[in-house]
Image (tube, rainbow, N blue to C red; front, side, top):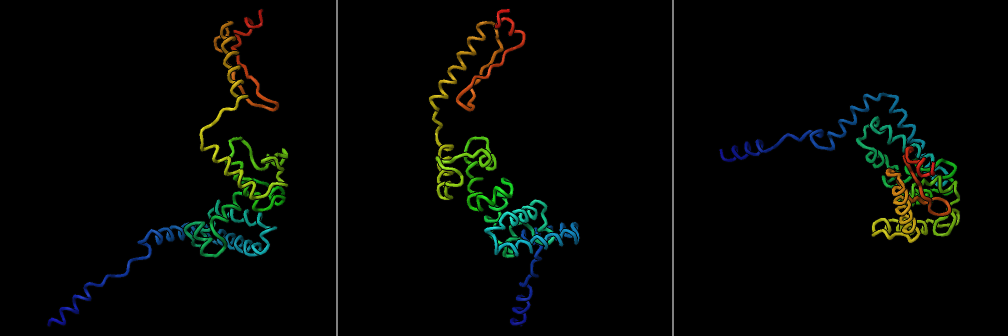
Length: 237
């Protein structure tokens, strides 16, 4: 009897296997399948076509990286990976052995920042480094704008500078942004001039006058704003 009780106890101790959908990953996959069903065959067909394009182009990535980036960007932005039953863009990349998520984001970043002709001229590594450089510097600029302006970085043109040198400049820009800001002597003089000019204008009757120092081509300029009713007094009319 004791043996029978032990056997019964063993059977009672067994638990039914947990449903795959009970786990976070299973729930995400279930949601992905639901979204895929909504997208229908058209979304699945488009996703397969984009993945096939990437496979064909990977062997020629030095030349075709931009087209790969465009395909990856569409798969990500339109969430076409859901039509293939993947819960996320990263899951699709891993399951299909396409490339790492970091590399995919690099190519997508290039496509987002540069038109095709400019990206191909720079190449994938320098193009991505340039996008990181403009993001690290305080100026309001873009990689395309720097190319159009014939800008230099560390005294070198974008054709001359290497990816290693450009990466070093990114590090410097980030360090400057993180550290205490040192005021440029020329900027300090311009701000002092703005304050003095504003005080003089208000003393002459333009109470709402404001003066700002702004850097432009050739140096600093003062931008003056004066109420219309005060203009006649300032002009001596």
